[in-house]
Amino acid sequence: MYAASLAPDAAPASMADRAYLALRDRLIMLAIRPGEPIDDDAIATSLGMGRTPVREALKRLEVDRLVVSFPRRGTFATGLDIADLAHLSEIRVQLEPLAARRAAERAPGPARAELEELAVRTEGLDVHHTNRTDVMRWDLGVHRAIYRAAGNPHLEDVLIRYDNLATRIHCMFLDRLSTFDLNVVAEHVELLRAIAAGDGDHADELAREHVLGFERAIRAVI
Image 1 (spheres, rainbow, N blue to C red):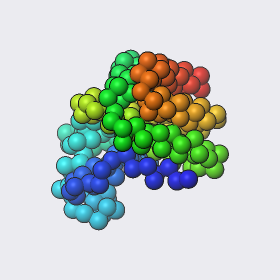
Image 2 (image 1 turned 60 degrees about the vertical axis):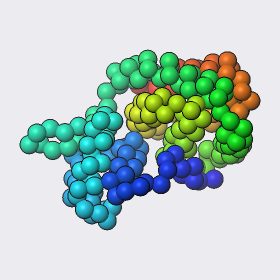
Image 3 (image 1 turned 180 degrees about the horizontal axis):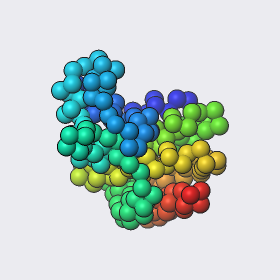
Image 4 (image 1 turned 90 degrees about the vertical axis):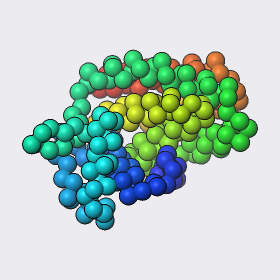
């Protein structure tokens, strides 16, 4: 099963949107390494577009804290500081359970059916034979499905931003987390099914433990 088959975003509506999504993926998955300079000309060429949409995308990515710009020096991928793990967890441990609870309480029938189907697909994910970057993309897609199901676009926007930053940290230590992927997949299946069943209390509890478990796993390999 190919993880990228779960599309976390709608089809881009403009060239700038396409540049934003392509660059965001490279930054999150560390294809552009932390601290690496970003050559907008080279990126525009690789994406088959002009520099203007790339520059528009970089402005959005700076708001997302995925890039940072310096006068007369240029734009760079934001560095990774392990201290950010605690800062991100402090926020996510409050908001991820809220999104899971709201999804369990508010998601309409068709959305619940989609989450149950996603649980089945996630349960069938062959982690041992799937590229680990694709597993990370699948992880992002599962989280986004839950955020959408919560029915609060403002909460969704905030959580996407912080989940992106947390995933960068996850990718930095991916090679050291030998069994974590299996745990993540199992946790996602249980969480998706709790939401689909409308069990807000259990969904809240599972989402909270998911965030805390992620932080513990990263700290264990630092």
